[in-house]
Structures are given as structure tokens and as C-alpha cells.
Image 1 (cartoon, rainbow, N blue to C red):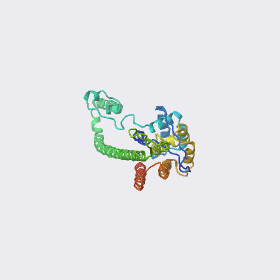
Image 2 (cartoon, one colour):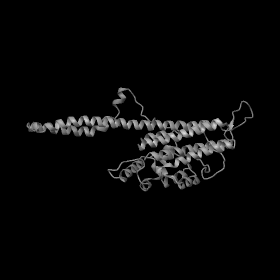
Image 3 (cartoon, rainbow, N blue to C red):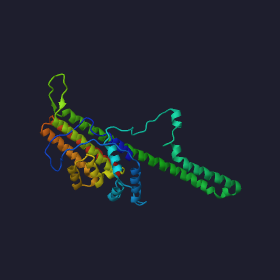
Image 4 (tube, rainbow, N blue to C red):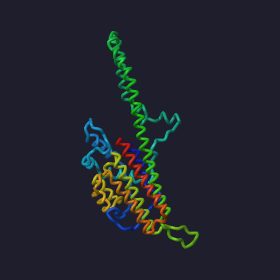
Length: 334
């Protein structure tokens, strides 16, 4: 599920909006800053973090969302790991589809090994074959032993039906949860794209000198759209870091500082988010408020054109966004 959300969030940046404007600043609307992130890949640090997370709780504790202490995650977070998480989260396109594509050709299917039933079960299957061979040999040496073990045959038949029902039931429940969260993530992605498309269409443009020349964004509107684009990516980062353990290091103090170093956040924005009297897993709410305030001040200053209906549609999209990421959290928490 972590991988699904990460892949989904990687293509959720505002595709139609570019940017940012000069507006009145206060504690809810920090100063703009934007740079393009570089690309790095690593898996060793991710495995190290997952290993630390597995030891952070007892064997009998329930693994709820974000149950690992911040201090443990902070110690396991390296700069390479943080860069990998950031790069995956601010991508403008997915590296491959979320769902692996199926090739119906028989020759291709028989050449596959990784991820197949055989690759996942060959060890246990081989062990059962060895055990069955041992039992057959034992029966051959001691024929009367079969009568003494007849009760195990009855027990096996009863356990087989219970095991089949349990596996089928929980597998369906797990898939249902995955599918719901995936649908919510896609809807969230769509509404964010709606914001970008709407703002890009209503941003002010300069009048071309010739009718044959295309119009261009004014410097103020381009700056505003770029800031919107950056805020949407920050919102995605913080939102999915609140839900998935794989992206949890981003919310740590070290992760927030790395966002500043990468140009995704400004020092002032990091200070506002860190000092806000809200849990670390709720910081994306503040970023959503920044987007709304940016839109309202942009309309007041004339950067975004449109009437009351335009504002109503934008606010409705923001409310849908809040409902979608809230539904993801509700599903994961049961």
C-alpha cells in the first residue's frame, strides 16, 4: 500500500499551473521559493528504515499508522533516503504504472519468476514434500503407525476448511481496503489537477502586440502559478508522509530541513510548519490553507480573473480535497 500511495502521489503535481505571485505575507502565507529537485535512487536506506520500524514495537503490538516513535525514524533517516523519498514524491510522471501490466502470451508468462506463486512458495512447498516423503517412509517401516495417527487426518480436514475461509476472507478485506485508498488517492489527484487547470486558465495574460502572436502570462501571474505548483507538491509530500511509513522520515526535523535544502520549502515555511500547534501528521492542512489564501489574495490583486462563481468552484474543489485525504486516514485507522 505504501508503494501505491507513493506512485500515485508522484504524478499529482499541478500539471496545468506553473506558478506564483507577490502577495501580502503573514504567518499563514510564507514567502515563495522554488527549485527543481534532482533525481536519486536507493533501496538500502529504505530497507534499513523498515527494519528499524519492525524492531521499534513489540511483537504483540498492533501496527497502526505512524506508530513508530519520531526518534527512531530520525536515527534511521539518512540524506540519501530523504532524497529518494523526495524525488519519488515530486516527480511529474510515474516511472511505471501502479498496477503491473499483464502480458497474456504463454512464452512470456513461463519465463517469469519474480513475484510468481512459485517464487513465493517454493521453499515451503519443498519442505512439505520432504516431510511427506518422510511420513511415507515411516509408514512403510511401521505399518501400524497409520492407525495411531488417524485422528490427525480428521483434524487436518477441519483445519483445512477453517484456513481456507480465513485466508479468503482477510484477503478480500485487504484488497477492499487497498482499492478504497487507491480510489481516494486518484480522486485527490484529480481535484488537485482541477485546481491547477482552473487557475492556469484564469491567470492574467499580457495582450500580444499582433493578433497572430499568442498571449503570455504576466510576470505576477506566472509567479503565482509557480507558487501554487510548489505548494501542491508540498501538500502531497506532507499528506502521504502522514499515511505511509515509507515516507514518514519527511516529517521529522531532519526531513523538514532537507526539504529546505532542496528548495521545496523555504526556511520561513519550515519554521511556520514546525512551530504550528498541530501534530506533524496534520501539517498538510496548513498547506491547504496557504493555497486557499493564495487564491483569495490573487483574486483581490487581479492576478486571477473571474467572478463569484469562479471563487465558489475553487472553494468547492478545496473542500473535496479535504474530504478525500480525510477519507484515506479514516480508512487506514478503521
